[in-house]
Amino acid sequence: MVRTGPYGQDQQWTALIAALEDSLRLHRHRPGALTRLDRYLHQRTHGMIGSLLWLIRGAAINAVLDGTEKITKKALDAVDADFTSQSSRPPAT
Image 1: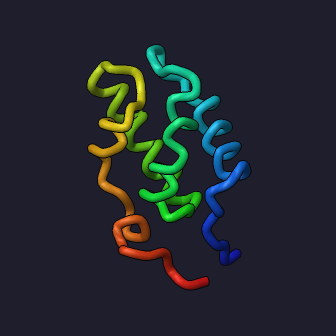
Image 2: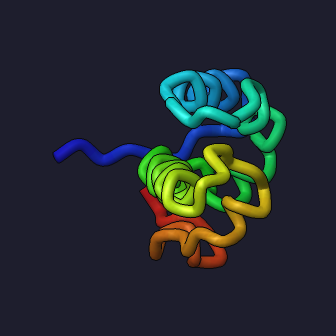
């Protein structure tokens, strides 16, 4: 097991979000919608990649199930975060 820490809110974080967004296969999702939410996503996930993946995955599944086929801030707000993201601060590394 490898212990990792949170990403900073920088270009690397935004590039990670862009790569995840590029892998989405939602018919109505607008490219760049998630990268424009990089600060919000960092705040929600405390910069933790596992939390980011959980959040985007949940929103993508909901988008397919409800037929919207896109991820918006409202859709992300509707996803319950994981325990790490729910805490008031990230875990110590």
